[in-house]
Amino acid sequence: MLAKRIIPCLDVKDGRVVKGISFVNLRDAGDPVECAKAYSNAGADELVFLDITATIEARKTIIDLASRVAKEVFIPYTIGGGISSLDDARAILEAGAEKISINTAAVRNERLITDISKAFGNQAVIVAIDALRRENGWEVFISAGTEPTGLDVIKWAKKVEKLGAGEILLTSIDADGHQTGYDIELTAAVCDAVSIPVIASGGAGSPEDIYRVLTEGKADAALAASIFHYGKYTIGQVKEYLHKKGVCVRK
Image (cartoon, rainbow, N blue to C red; front, side, top):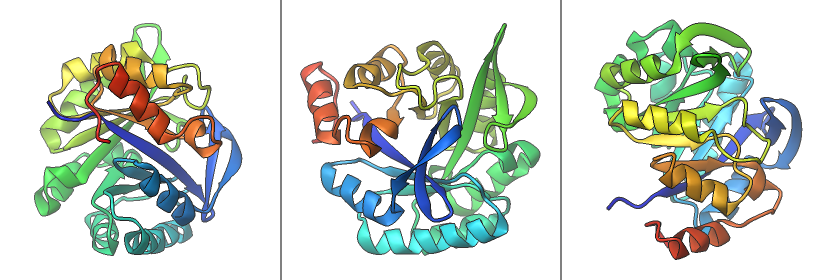
């Protein structure tokens, strides 16, 4: 059985880690490299950095960040935000990241998923899907959760798998930052629809929330931010809880 992964998420704006609620009301949470080192030492399985502003200047900053992290951290990490071309992906991977995450660019240029997958392998390509609940399911949003697309989340998840994505980073906009639990129904629906790994994101408030999304939600990994950034729980506490509940996790 593959071990479930615990992945701290570091949203980066203007060179600092920030965290908000439903993608707004951002608070400072520290220096990204220092946070990354602390999480690596604390037992994180992977890290995800998301440049949430992704202007041209910010993209240059995130490439520099990839290099700085590579010198200090020795666990896999993903960089996302503002990646809109094969050259963008190459620059970040060559700077040291193991994976790149694309969201807005994937919707606007589906071929980019395939191009990056063919160039670097599908294991290097995560497609991030930001989902907002609607009456009859969930809709894909882009541009940091500000732009509706009309795309159905389940149909889009199936399509990105066919296009070459190696993993899906699934965020519930409704649950993000509220610390009241993941959207279990959403996560399970996407996991049932695809055969590639799904990282659940949005809503972690306790080890029980993470346990539920890894079991009931069928996720392969759980992404969390607020509970780790502000010291509510440690990665060690979460892993110990999961281990006692019978979930296979790396020590």
